[in-house]
Image (cartoon, rainbow, N blue to C red; front, side):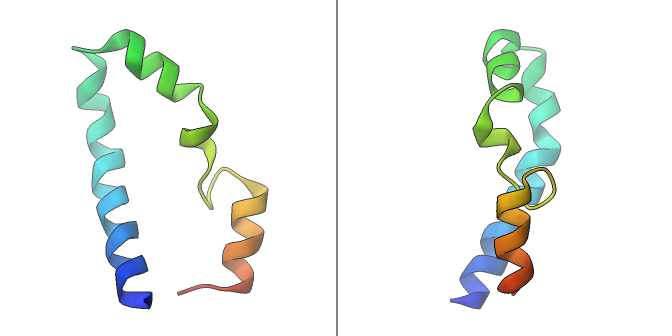
Length: 58
């Protein structure tokens, strides 16, 4: 399970780096995503996710 979580985090990290490349062709979708709770729900930007992560890190 931990390996699966680690792979998911690594995959998400590489996707996050590529999000800026979407901005040029999909500005409206990119703007909506930038303001969404989905984007902000990371251990870096959300205190609740960070608290859970701190209790149960990989």
